[in-house]
Image 1: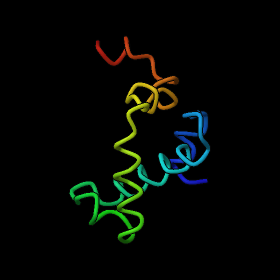
Image 2 (image 1 turned 90 degrees about the horizontal axis):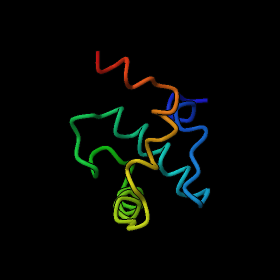
Image 3 (image 1 turned 30 degrees about the vertical axis):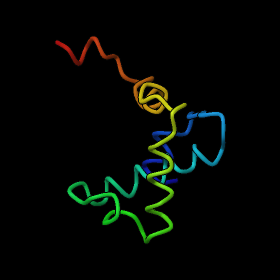
Image 4 (image 1 turned 180 degrees about the horizontal axis):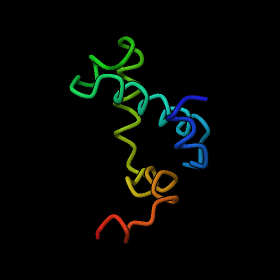
Length: 79
């Protein structure tokens, strides 16, 4: 299991495809943090899929990051 799959193992965006796309995008963007989306993705089809994912009106960043932040005690980070 990749680090991204582990971080997002409890994600539930209401569609398994969106859950998988979250993991893939996290892996791609982390592998090339200074790259643009087309540069980070593995081709035109993957780039289009990334833009479609990001254009989802129903997705909120809080929902996407909830599985990652669930294990963090954010009050300790503020100190």
